[in-house]
Length: 217
Ligand code: GTB
Image 1 (cartoon, protein in one colour):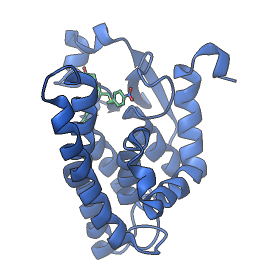
Image 2 (cartoon, helix red, strand yellow):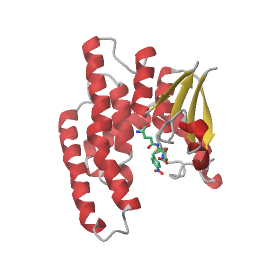
Image 3 (cartoon, protein in one colour):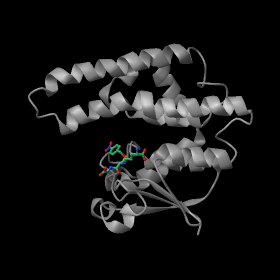
Image 4 (cartoon, helix red, strand yellow):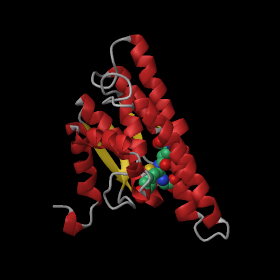
């Protein structure tokens, strides 16, 4: 069996590429590894066969020759360690790229996810309007720090790496809120990432599945 990943049968974002299968597709495209995608419904995601692959009933998963992985960070790390294109060869630079991967999911992503939660899931709670600006400011604080570190550099640490792939994927999630565009250096960083041919292929592949029929092209 070759590589098989799972993705939403139909992503709630309608093809904006914000669901997490996009980052795994992107990593696979950067490495040039062919892969298949198994689409799963919300119902199937919560059923025992999928729970056996992903204990939390989520997508994406990664299967290859009997190996089953979940968590996008771990999947991208696995790919980066085994295939050229996502990690530098220098061991210290590789360790720093891993730091950026963790920073993406552990430091930058949590307040972004909080904002999504307060807007979509908790939006009707009486305290939501009070909480929302606090969460938005937490994102701004992290973006300010990240932008200061990025400076005028093209990527976070030398050449493009899995650290940039994870960071750009996480930052993309903040674009609909408008906060990403408040930080022009970060918006330009994300735009550079999106311009990569591998990202374009990954985005097009998920769009072909998720876009409403009229805009799928
Ligand atoms: N930490 C895990 C990982 O990185 O792999 C998180 C996986 C995860 O959150 N998966 C989501 C999922 O399966 C899909 S990506 N959710 C269903 C569930 O938990 O029941 C999150 C997502 C969903 C929708 C949008 N959107 O519509 O914009 C964006 C991102």
